[in-house]
Amino acid sequence: MIESHNTKGLIFNVQYYSIHDGPGIRTTVFMKGCPLKCLWCQNPESQRLQREIFFELEKCTGCGICVQACSEGAIELFEGRSRTNRKKCSGTGRCAEVCPVEARKIMGRSVTAKEVFEEVARDALFYQRSGGGVTLSGGEPLAQPRFAVSVLKLCKDAGIHTTVDTCGYASWDTVQQVLSYADLVLYDFKHIDPAEHKRYTGVSNELILDNARKIYHELAIPMLARVPIIPTYNDSADNIKATTQFISSELGKNIKVHLLPYHRLGETKYERLEKMDLAVLIEPPAEEQMLALQEIVQSFGLEAVLGG
Image 1 (tube, rainbow, N blue to C red):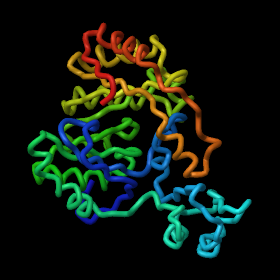
Image 2 (cartoon, helix red, strand yellow; image 1 turned 120 degrees about the vertical axis):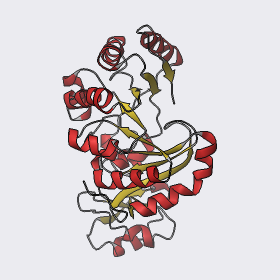
Image 3 (cartoon, one colour; image 1 turned 180 degrees about the horizontal axis):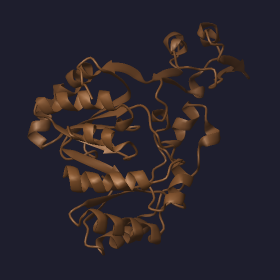
Image 4 (tube, rainbow, N blue to C red; image 1 turned 60 degrees about the horizontal axis):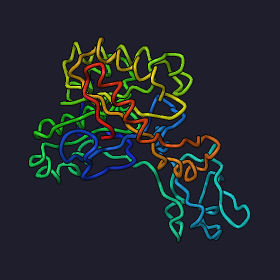
C-alpha cells in the first residue's frame, strides 16, 4: 500500500482533548464508513462512506430556500417545514450552504492526510506532557486504509503516539498495513456468538475474532478490549463470560477490558438524519449491572474498567 501526504479521506469530526480513546490527552479523528450496521449504533452519521446532511427540524422556518437550491429534487416542504428524500440525496451540501437559520449541516468533509496531520499536530505539546497522541476512530478506520496509513505514518514520523479504534472487520492484509503504524489498538467485541453478531451488526464475527488473534500473536501490538454493554442485545452474563473467556484464553491475561455502558446520545442523530425508523429505544444499563459484569471479567483474572 503506497501512502501519500495527499491521500484524501472523508472524516466527520475531530475531537480535541479526548481522554477516553487511549492514554493521555488525545485528538480523535472520526472517519466515515463502516462495514457493520449495529442496531444500537451511536454514530449513525459514520456508517456511509459519503457526505450526509444533518437536519434540525426545530430550527426550520419553512422558507423553501433549500428546496430551490437542491439540484437533485431531494427536498420538499411538508406541513410548513422541509424534509429530505434520503434516497435522492447524495450530500452535495448546497442546502446547508444556503440555509439562513443553519437547520442543515454537512456531515463529512474531504481532507488530505497532510491536512489532518497539520490539524492534530497543533496539540503536540499536550501529547508530550500527558503521554497522549492521536486516535483514528469512526466509523471504521480500516474502511479507508490508504488514508489511515498516510495519517498514521505522518504522526509516527513526528513522534506522536498513534491509536486505532477498530471493529476488526477487514482483510488481514488491510489490518496488517494499517496497524503497522499503530502504537495501540482499541478492539471492539460486540457479541461473541457468530449468529447473534450477524443478527445485530449485519456481519458474522469469525473474521473479527481471527484478526484479534493475529494482531495479538503476530503483530504484538498492545491491545485494549472494548465491550459495549447494550441491554437486551449483548449484556447477558453468559455473553460476557464467553467474551472474557475468549480474551483470556485466545489472547492473553494482560489485556485490559473496558466495559462501555450504552448511552442515548446517538438517538437524536437518527432524527437529524431523518431515519427514525432505524432508531431503537434502549435504556442504559444500571450501575449495579455494570458492577456485576465487571466482577465477571475480573473473575477470569483480567483487569476490567467501567467506561473509558
